[in-house]
Length: 426
Ligand code: ATP
Image (cartoon, rainbow, N blue to C red):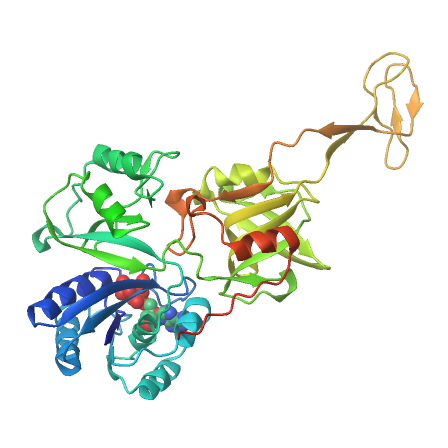
């Protein structure tokens, strides 16, 4: 059976992954064998999310009525029911629903009625509390299909410590990263000298280690010195897989969806208020604005090196008319030139403009010229992929250290529409 849970926390506390970890232990105590614990991230642009739009699915073997009773009791005991935006959902299904609903919740927007339709068709047990919105995430989690997967080991705090500053030894986190990278990632951001894996929110998570296998996240975890934890759970996840991205074309992007889109840089990147960098990307007469926000730090320097005419593939969510960049692939570099007034052949001084459309004039000897000096500038950028630093990375974004998927590389190189339809489960 598959047990789904979502929407149990509020900005003031709790975390659905913690309830998942508690439930795993309760199921095992009740003689229900846990096969897998899954942490699924859904559409990052959903406005109702508390933080990272996570939902949980536990695959287990045993009595479904007992599992449903345990899951409901666990949620009723731990969820932040008093918070206005907390609307828990609990699902237990003996049949795994087709993955279409998962892909819809990951890449689009869904309704509670659509979730209920899926649950009814699967003959699932389900309970939605308050406005029942959590059924969307809980249903998506049980329907999830992870053709690409990563792992996260989450360590939780003891109740008495929650709300106090987290005690996690910084040096031990850097040593964990140094010893296990690239098999684990995003524990720290070495370039910006920042710890990434310890949250600052008032939830029960102490820290989380992300990596390619349970063995690697456990190896990294063994390096970490911290306050005594309450419990730990290794989750299989869709984090770091780019599962949210679909191929897009500049003229056809829809609000709140995430894309990889190829086009030609159509304006010189400009730094605006707050240090955000933007440029226009064009394709077949359509244009969108691409944004590299201030928190993406050094990634903005890469973006600033683009010039009009470069051919790139840009990945990110389309929100408010802009594509918010998560990474960028550069396939063709345009010739960069600088146009300046020529040097006077008579007195070797640089001329100045003689007025619009009037060419150039030497202010020393009066010599005139119509042609400017065109200087070819050496490009500071190489073709290839560039990403935001770990400190600015979204949960679903695939770190370059994991490689670039074939469909993304194909789209960068040829702009070819790639098949990214969800694979049907057998
Ligand atoms: P938590 O740790 O509790 O999971 P969160 O940041 O993941 O916190 P939630 O509190 O779960 O956010 O809130 C997200 C809400 O949005 C849930 O009710 C979930 O069912 C719903 N939701 C998730 N994906 C979609 C979607 N694609 N369309 C509509 N609603 C969605």
